[in-house]
Image (cartoon, rainbow, N blue to C red; front, side):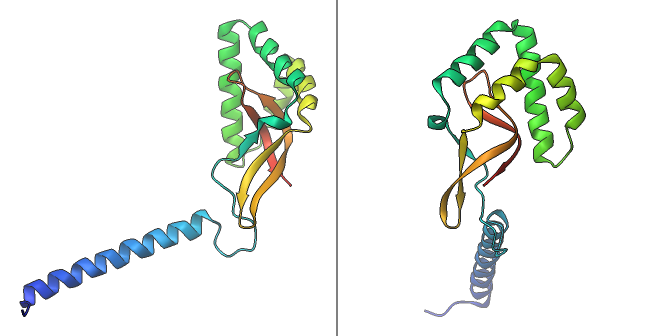
Amino acid sequence: MTKTRAERAEASVRWLAGLAIGLMLAGAGAWAGGGDQGAPALSREPAPDMDTVSPAARKAYAEFWKGLAKPKADALERELNALEARVHRGESIDPDLVRLRHNYPQLFQMSSSLDSAVWIIASSSGPQRVKCVGLGWIGRNGRLRCLGRLTT
């Protein structure tokens, strides 16, 4: 069965569209994985390893959050989330940390209880354990967070 010129053109367009989509997906995968830069490709979201957090630290943070009035706890959590987003964008938050340390010294004192806490990230050589350089904290939902950067 022979194809008409229109059918051949349509098949060619479909083939080229599939090729273009494949190239876009491959390019997006290389971009998301960091390309061939030699550095480990990080996952989008590092996973906190809650097994590395002591029960005493968890309890201290839970009591800290419960000790705050709900509006104050809501405001602090929003501020910490906003600061974390700014850190991820590469912005400096040093003045904000000074103010936070003044207003919530207990938050900074408790942070030292998280020195042994680690996050797991995906790298080209497999899972990698990283630590928080900055202010580690536990949110009201009990999740380990980092207001800084994660490094090996």
